[in-house]
Length: 200
Image (cartoon, rainbow, N blue to C red; front, side):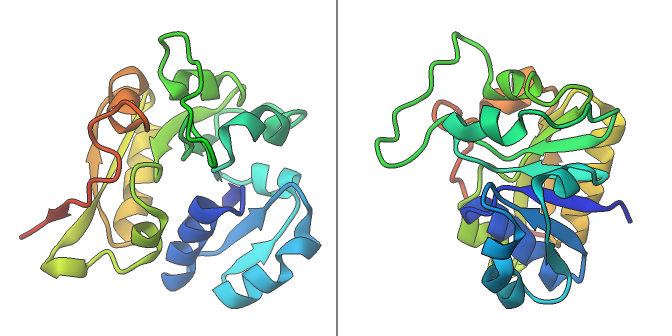
């Protein structure tokens, strides 16, 4: 099982950590304030999740990043080249309280994000569902909740797809970042916040 790190302990980062913990999949959770600030969070999540530094989380085989859009450059600055490791882009180019879309100059947000993680194989995932659905039971409503993912590297997508499956969701590959990333991008894409379930 690949090692997993999480940069960002907001709603999405914590929801992803909750889903991992429920399946006894170990991970390192980090934020900008340091491991001590996460003691209560990881205690509530259970023994599978440990608090770590940003650098420790970023060193794992698969790194999920979920940070407010405007804070992404600072959150990722100064980290070593990812050297072909997988980085999951769980970000949306918008943030509270104003929910004003970021100016992307016509590019998909994942294309902008990829420039902040040199050497990474970027897979877009875990950004389109509301956090309570990511952390909740994926077997709800009598089927398996759908999780979309996209990326430009087939092997990286296969690894993320396998993780999605282990978490109990039904993963659907939307293709490349330029195509799939736009479909799940919020705002603008048609798929965010849709709670879809696959039956059978």
